[in-house]
Image 1 (cartoon, rainbow, N blue to C red):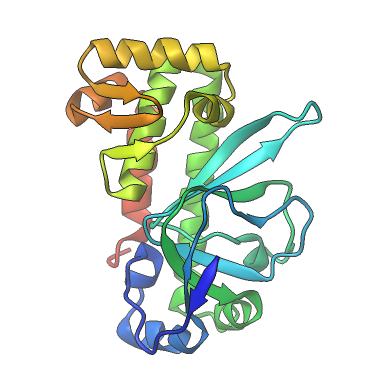
Image 2 (cartoon, rainbow, N blue to C red):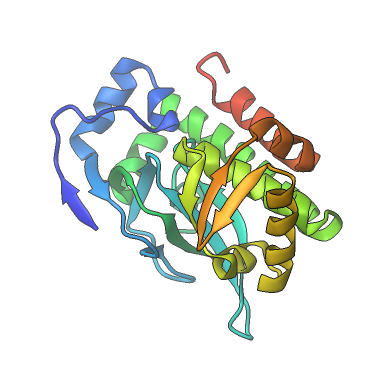
Amino acid sequence: MSVSNSPNPPIENQILAALSAAEYQRLVPHLERVEFKNKQILYEVGEPITHVYFPHQAIISLVSNLEDGSTVEVGIVSNDGMVGLPVIWGGNTTTTTAFVQVADGGMKMKALPLIAEFNRGSELQRLLLRYTQALFTQVTQTAVCNRVHTIEERLARWLLIVSDGMQSDKFLLTQEFIGEMLGCRRSGVTVAAGILSRAGIITYRRGHITILNREHLLDVSCECYSITKNEYARLLSKQS
């Protein structure tokens, strides 16, 4: 991960963009531009979290690691969030691993200055508490989704989330990786992707995915996507 300083970082992350100009300027001296690498680990289970991250178009997966070596994605952080929330909860470690699913840029900040700013009871505190609620909604809906919805519905929801975070309808993801994130076998992803492909909703060739018809993908997706998206919009708007 490369890092560079900037006297006036661009506000590409929605958490930072939702702050007033004065509150944002308080953070500027502590923010560093970073370029994430694919599959880069930002923190591991039980590891003290020394930095927090505000992704731009990067996609960060929060995954649970099981004893048999398998992993299941329990949450996604993109340009609408912050990686490293446990530092403001007082625990500073977590039972999940955060790693880069899709590489791009973001902003990096040491945990201690963020904690100090949070403890001021400032605008940032209120915003991060609302983001915590939004992320909790995403995690709970993911649990519901993995339990009761079909693989096609779950795949459609997941592709929409990734597309939103990347702000693109084209991305490179293998079926094996998608299966790990959805907690299902690769063969299940193959069948589900084939159904969406034959319906003209996506194309999938050698890991290259293109969403051709977003409206139809929304129709296929379960209600978990809209519930989560609406909650993020409600909680993180400047009017909240």
